[in-house]
Image (cartoon, rainbow, N blue to C red; front, side):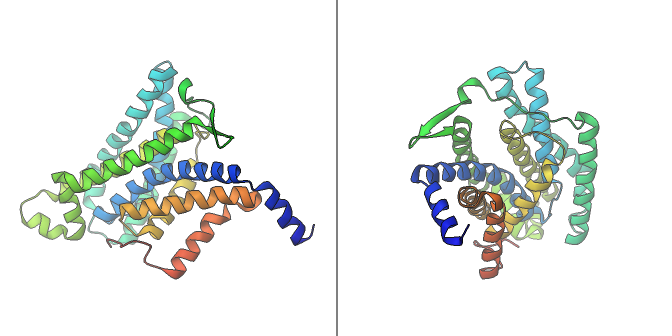
Length: 305
């Protein structure tokens, strides 16, 4: 097939309704990416820790959500219980890890922190395999979130609409915490000058612990929310941690709104790629990353580093 014929064929497949549908799919995917990457960005901004184990906590959140839903008998109550408690379970795991391990390492070089969190990711991956095994699982969404609704004549999953609503709520909640609460303001100040915060009598250690736990809570929340849309399996942490690091890099290290912008670029570019060139759809977001970092190596928004 000639290049012109291929273009004509592709043009015939790309309809306005299909474009809108894929755009919404990309937005819903971006909301999950934002929830996970905002947690990673928050940890990077406050603690200066490149937490490679963030993806493992996302995976544990998904497995925990499935376990809680099954234990509660499934249904609507089981679903909401899983969504509410799985991130809390991940937060508790992260609190133990922070108090026992991370709190002694904050002054170390970034390379050492990177290697340490990579080792922790491997340990958490093995513990996940021991606990849940290698079987595939999936969390069933409640009946009112199953099925599709018509968007410009094209079916669109109800659960994706739910994700479109959750993303902005998470963004507003994180912004309110960072800008309107005392502990959030202290965490932001510690991100800029941790020595000064400690000099005025504030226990910086517990501020860092809270920042780490909050970031990991968001990883667990992302894992719980995505579980009805993907297969819950070992290795699901690998892709998400690569994507999350790329998102915070192009958005600006430690910048929450940069994480949102990066997530939108990543999610929408991939969904549009599925529509335009399905065989190479995965290339589109990475190509966008290359272009952005070539034009603006420091990221789209101001980095706190």
